[in-house]
Image 1: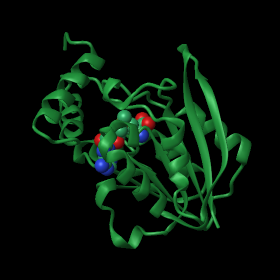
Image 2: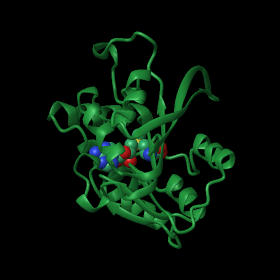
Image 3: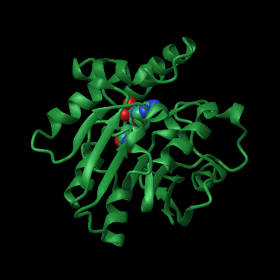
Length: 225
Ligand SMILES: C[S@@+](CC[C@H](N)C(=O)[O-])C[C@H]1O[C@@H](n2cnc3c(N)ncnc32)[C@H](O)[C@@H]1O
């Protein structure tokens, strides 16, 4: 495994995108990681600190409530959500990511399943009290992002909350100058999660990345009436 993990992920992504397959590279990467021939660059081994902070500040009680974690990868965020009492569904498009999450967390209370955000089961429509989206929409090419954003919002139940964490795109950077993946989100894209009239943006924070202070991330919270 001599290749830098970020470079290797970029290479797999470019090969997949050249075949006009926007998501196939995720399975290739997780499968290679499972064989020990790659490292998943975003697999940090603990929950996203910006999600942990949100739980600490909001103190939600998930008892008797449902949650869904989108693009859950190897499961660290889903475990945090499930530990707060939510009946948690965590899904990813990569079967190997789902297997790895199940292996990482053998006593998990979360249910890990394979599903595609762009084609979610009908029974998930407006079904979840808490929806957590971290870095999945930005992992999709910009032309797919409006559809993905709409699909995320559809999962939120009336009275439910959506938390979005994403990298921030430099102000004014045009689409064709973003060399993804990832394709970080503009403020307008983050605000567009509230495109349905009953899904309202109630908080939008811009948080410096500790390891790279010039960069910032969005943390947005939405509420469905
Ligand atoms: C950049 S990773 C982020 C993983 C995790 N959310 C995190 O923050 O560490 C994007 C994840 O989304 C998954 N993914 C990409 N496209 C997806 C889709 N259409 N439906 C479901 N999962 C998807 C990938 O397999 C990958 O696990």
